[in-house]
Length: 111
Length: 414
Image (tube, rainbow over all chains, first blue to last red; front, side, top):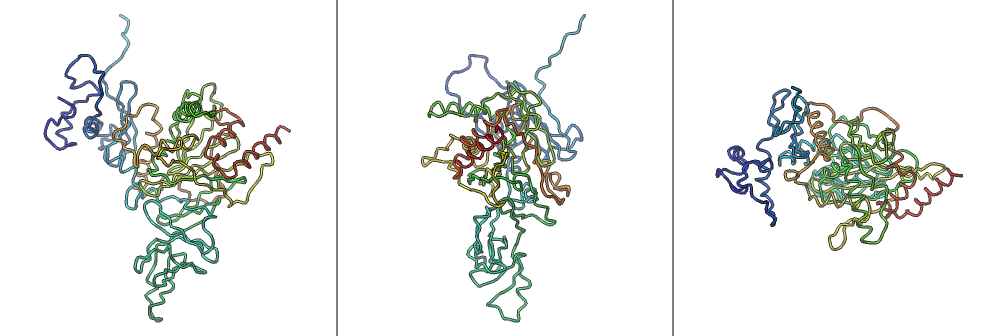
């Protein structure tokens, strides 16, 4: 499935579309593991690009449970390979950072 | 990255918009005092609204809505009277409070004029600037920040830029751009075009910090070779919510003003107070040497061979309103995230019936702002580098300014 295709036929930005579009940055939906093309890279369609990033961003404050609506703020940024969402709740004014837990690093205890 | 809706909410300043309502809690400079002579009018566009500023024949300043409430003719063409402004079309006269005092074509016995008002707004002068407040009552105090009221020599370069003010405010809390845009890029340009770029802007950042405080955000940086006792870290300098940045060093204290004309135009002004001390001169408090900054060439290229021109390039080329739904920001952009959150927090305060941050309700003579003196650890050299490679290089009094610093340093050494 190409990131440019509309897999549902729904209007861009609809919830149905948001659920199924793969998160390409996270490696989802990658069809092959072959060599990376060195040819010209086509820029993403901006609306699909945005839809992918809106699809899995936090929707609710972990402190009070209120929705991150127009009163709140969710800013996505990257640190190394990690996607981070800086979230501020307009209801309880609590700020938190939420990140994709794509990898867990721990120390092996002595045994 | 933001959603389209979040970006719109943060960048819209017009009347009736959420952020526009927050922005209307503050006083704004709308003219230099010297640009408004006795008996003259001036068009003003602020936060998406049009006004006419005037100085009547008694010397009093006034500001009214652009349109006469009678038939909508522009008051810019009005007749300036002893105490007020009269519409050129049918002669309706309004005083500083907006009350209609005279309607020459109506019957002499009519009380119609008593029921007519034009929108009128408080106006004050400070530091050679004309300030106004277009929000609702109660009117806050005009904040007398240090650079506007302290003694020294004032100098202001300005430009009208075709972009949203928030791009400039995000730049204010982006310390890393200094070593790249004003350091590496400046050096690259200097090598290419044959001039020497200022070295003090090239030092690498080891750490940055942002502390919220009463009037905005204190920005701190720790540069290579510095420790936490250095001014850049220990004192830092403030972003002034919602439209300013206080910066300076070595006796040059500056307020960078980003006044939203509307969503896609901003009046920027680099307002400097030169007061290096040791007997340095003092001009009359309302005297400012002003000049328009050359920021764009005839071929459309932006002029980037000075510090503020480089910032202007960064602001303007992001577009009329930066599309934050397609950005890719990282850990080094936390300042921009911090300022976006700050704006949202003020929205919540206003929605809850509170004042947003930095609205001054107390009487005062001066408000001193924290700002480093030894900028970039460069000592007195910073003043000369900033004068010769910053916006002041276009000042008609540049030679005088350089001499002021030379004399100050000589007096200190002698």
